[in-house]
Image (cartoon, rainbow, N blue to C red; front, side, top):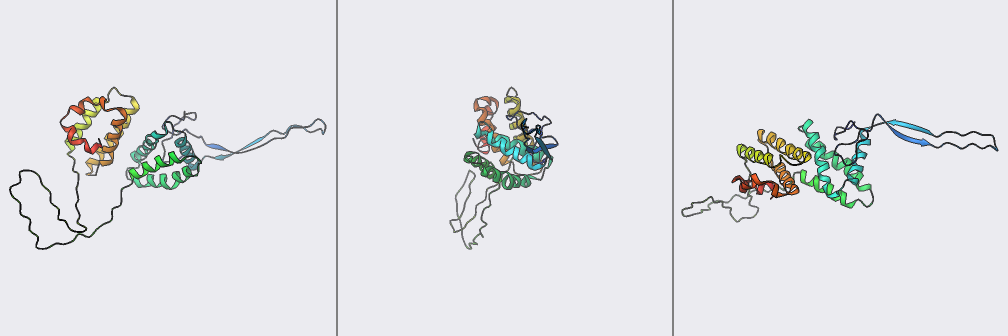
Length: 256
């Protein structure tokens, strides 16, 4: 089959389902047309002949491309891509880059070959850009000697940066694990009556975020994905988390 996709056992799976349809062991390679016989010449009918080829991973690549192109609504294809991405990294934990490479260098070129497919290509590239870390040019910090900053009494957190060329200011987000877990518990309460697929989408993001936290890794992408899901569902659903004091703290991290 193809390890990059979740493939159903159902060979007749409807196209609006997130997994790919099972293509079986073989695919039709060619149909050689038959010939109709003639009473005048005394010839008989010759039936058409079908030849088959073994199913390959490339067949599933093409099925995924076709599924992306036909997905409705088209602006929701990130849900389809994200589903297969999460299924893949749940099995291949450290293969995030490998999945992105397959999407960028195998799937994207096929999408671009399809005529009148610009919207699908644009949305697919947006998803890729969201998952790809931005490369920032590294600047050598200037060393400034004999600078003195005098301040009076300060009763609030303060941050200073000297006004010099190529000065570098870094900000790191540190998440309190207990507070994140409290936020996730509130989310679970708010979505307990939601659609099963919505609950699964939230659960995948939250479970992966907890896993990343345990390894002291950044969970910004997962928090942004959760915020995006909240906006899709409608903020009115999240009464518990909106009423929590922690919401104002987590709100910017969710992109809300």
